[in-house]
Length: 232
Picture 1 (cartoon, rainbow, N blue to C red):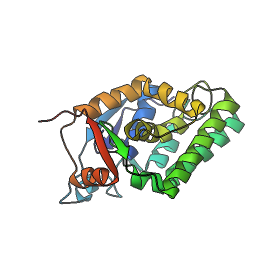
Picture 2 (cartoon, rainbow, N blue to C red):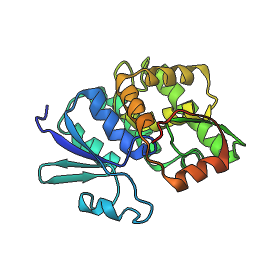
Picture 3 (cartoon, rainbow, N blue to C red):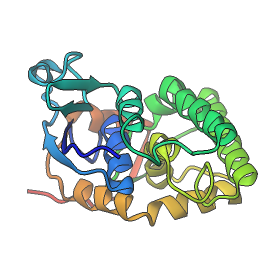
Picture 4 (cartoon, one colour):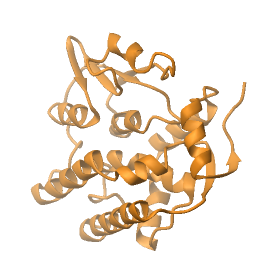
């Protein structure tokens, strides 16, 4: 086990799906870290992130003089230093890594159409075919993992990195009322009850900062049924 106290830079909690992945992984596994929040600035773009991230994007992990960016890179860096990031069994670990990599590089239609916004509930005007295909693949992938490895998490009894990578989808299911089979729905409910996800959610709805382009895109694809975010 590593002994470092890391610094994790993130953008915010209501919108930042990429930030959520390493944050919830470290929270759920009890890996100590200090959180630094730098909300996205519409006027300067990602420029303000360059002071701590070589890509000008978040998340970004600092471990002393070592800087690790990209959620997948952060995950593998942590896996070299802490047990439990990936499943111990080689077969299960291979499946989990493939599923996480598929999420990391895919499902673009769902990402673009259903932007993450934890504190609202939205009724979609429609579900375009590419989005439907992404949902169907996620439904099948989750069902496979849960049935093969026994649940309640995707790779078995313990929360691992593959669950962290799909955590933003869990919030999207809640926000947009995405229909899933019973097996996948039970997984969503289990994830939403996880203390680490509940902590993120509570802090997300407490945020008063709004990103205008994100809000406009959300209104473009659906009707807001409920907004429980703090104002001020």
